[in-house]
Length: 204
View (tube, rainbow, N blue to C red):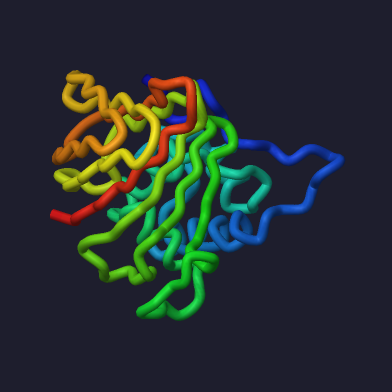
């Protein structure tokens, strides 16, 4: 199980490619705002999240591209789902979002691509997300962003192993798993090809 960002760390920009991705820049600024709103130092946030001060600082300055596990830890601390956090760095929310305009976010370290299908809104209780895991990709979360979060995982293509409460569920194309998330979870692409799935998330 991946703990924080120790196994697959965030993508660090090289000297040859120093420019920050615009999404990472907006995301870093929003993370800094959230910490400032609570009057927390980097040290206090590090204690609450289990992420090192240096990693938090570099994420806020967009010097790294944060991993899904890192964002999951911060969402847990700030009481948000990942879609809510990502929606806060977009423009004024719309009722309709065309497929080509749906926000896409990639955790290059783990081979995970996430697309927010639902029109973004920070007040949403339910949302749809498309996930893609490259063949062999294995990603773990040590806690849910919101305790008791309800998730429905519907596999559209490929094979997916999902572990929750120490029980592993093998899902094939068309299979759907419903769960409430209280502790660690793990998603692993179990087949030779990419796994593509829909994740329906409902806040408790």
